[in-house]
Length: 233
Image (cartoon, rainbow, N blue to C red; front, side, top):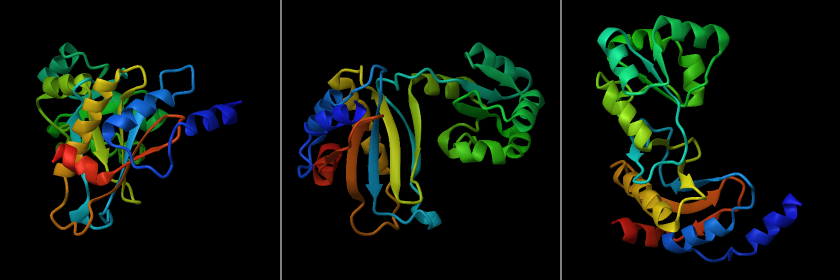
C-alpha cells in the first residue's frame, strides 16, 4: 500500500523540472502521505570538499517560525549558571552526575547540549557518545557559552544547526507538513540565505549544485539553484 501511495504522490512531481522555492513548498505539502506530522527537510548539495578544513560549511539559523518540534535541552553547568539554566527552562541540568549517566548508561534522551566553557573538560570526555550523534557542544554554534539563558531561548525559538556531510550535502529540517506554505517558505528561505552566506572563500566554481525539498517519507522535489540564488541574493 505504501508503494502505491508513494507512486501516487511521485506522479505529482515532474522529475525533469526544476521548481522555484514557492512551487516546491506548495508541492511538498501535497506529497505528505502518512498519518503523522512529517518533517519537511531541505537537502543542499554544495560544490565544496568537506575533507579540506577551509571548505567546511557549518552554521546555525533561527527559523522564523520554529521547527514544530519539542526540543529537549541538556545543560552542563555549575553554581549560578546551573540555576540560570533551570530558570531558563532546560530539561536537564548538571555536571558530573549527567556525564556519568551518559558515559556509563549511554543515555541520550536529549536533542541539544549546551555547556559553559569552564566545564568543557568534563564534556570533552563524552566525545565518543555525543560526537557521532552530532550532540557535542561547539562555540561556533553558540552551544559553548556562559550565556546559557540566551542559548536556551534561541534553541526553543527554533534554532537549527547544519553541517556539510562527507558527500558535500547539507540536510536541514525547515518545519512540519502542518505548517502553512508561507511559514515553510520563510523558514526554508532563511536556511538557504544562511548556507549561501557560509560559502567558504576557498570554494571555487558552482557553490549551489543541487537543492531539493521532501517530507520525511516523501519523494524529493528538485529546485533550480540559479532561482534560489536570485531569491536570496
